[in-house]
View 1: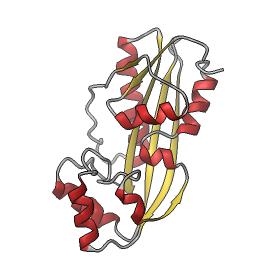
View 2: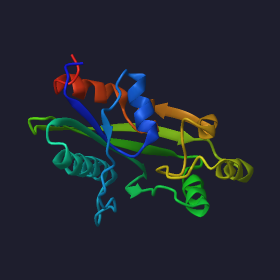
View 3: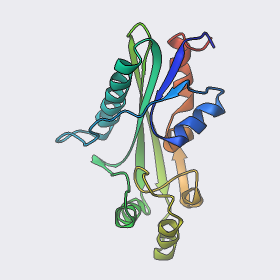
Amino acid sequence: MTGGEFVLASASPRRVDLLAQIGITPDAIVPADIDEAPQDRELPASYAERVAMEKARVVSEQHPDAFVLAADTVVSVGRRILPKAEDPATARACLNLLSGRRHRVYGGVCLIRPDGKLSTRLVQTAVAFKRLEVREIDMLIESGEWSGKAGGYAIQGLSEGFIRFINGSYSNVVGLPLFDVRQMLVGGGYLA
């Protein structure tokens, strides 16, 4: 580490755990209170990058002398952005849509340095579920793992047993593409 305060602009405990895997503990965790609704006709990749930048900018204003890292994870089928599942019906609808088909997970990441310089990355991972039977979807719903998850599933949970294919960053699907984050932190001067 080269020093300086490091702030994670996220309320996600998964992102904290992922950072710990690469030896990083935030000095502060500050969720960004922004409107995360997609704009009219906004594509999934653009949405992920825009939301990550907005989160970073809001938190950077509160911590101008810190390295501020923000991220957003978007699950999409084609041009359709799947919601974060907040209830069982939404989770079920997402899982029915994802069943037996390939989808994309976009990870938008933004780092703002203490000097105000901003850098972003957009990471894309392709994922495919097997064709899910009704009882399998019921089991995933009953687990509660879908709560608050983009696309209604958590790859690091029971859902992993139903994923037949993944191409790209696994940690991106969990919530933070660790290779890219580390490269950004090295390039930004936070890590040596």
